[in-house]
Length: 248
Image (tube, rainbow, N blue to C red; front, side, top):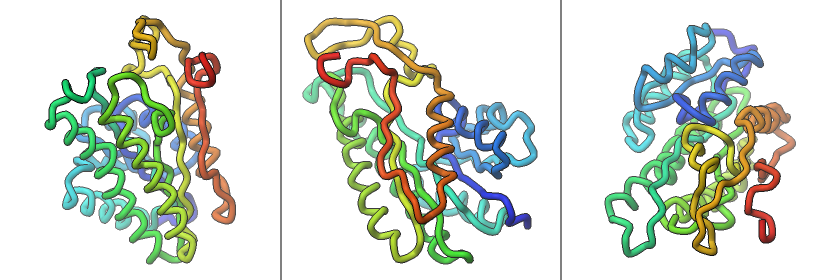
């Protein structure tokens, strides 16, 4: 095993932010584990790169998550970084119009999936030699303020912030750092509706500013590259003029 280069696992690596980050880390010399439910998008992300490890699976399934992390550790001999990126939302709806099934689906991916992957990464980082590693959670600006009609998504992202803080504290004795990146309007397929019009707090439908997703990738890379005695606890990277600060 080549243990001289850092190894990172990225969830939700088959598209959007996950894909952009995976390619940035591969370009930077990392060994990169790509987690996603379908193998074809992971293959597209990897594009034949020899340092990409395809890890198809469901982050909401405890058994699959354990198997995925075991496979990565067996392949690399250690795990240096986890980027907990997998997430989903639902169309804007008030809480009375939100089905229980939609609520549970969002909670399972955004919160339980983040917990399960962090749990396995923490276990490995605690026991590997040299001890330690870094966990980076994808929070979203919704971890601070909601969009209209986003009860499931916003609730899970607030919860991710609590998990980030707890992992930061619990990881100290084991040289495990945990930070969170809160992203606003990175232009991916999921964010494409921002360019044509999305609901605003005043009830209107308006387009919003977006930013290139490569700025998210470079930000996550910066967080990952810090030595373990330094940590970006929370970073917000967002389209400069999106309606988030003040009145927008």
